[in-house]
Image 1 (cartoon, helix red, strand yellow):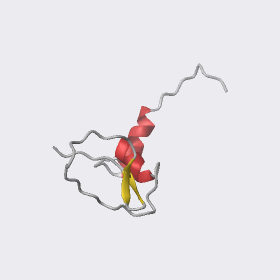
Image 2: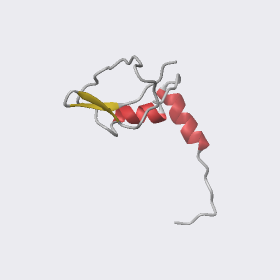
Image 3: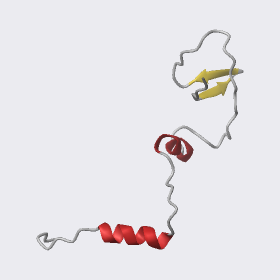
Image 4: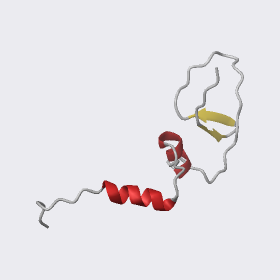
Length: 77
């Protein structure tokens, strides 16, 4: 089973961001990310929330948003 966790390389060691249960002598794969990607970056937000995916064109998306609006005459500003 493969799984993923993040960490930081510092002074010749990879320090995991959170403890991770592994068996001693487990093989690991280390991929060094671009240094510009920092904690709480847009890429990490996409990992958690996911990116917007939609096959529709811009006009169709805007039309759906406009049609979903509710106009109420009982509200006074």
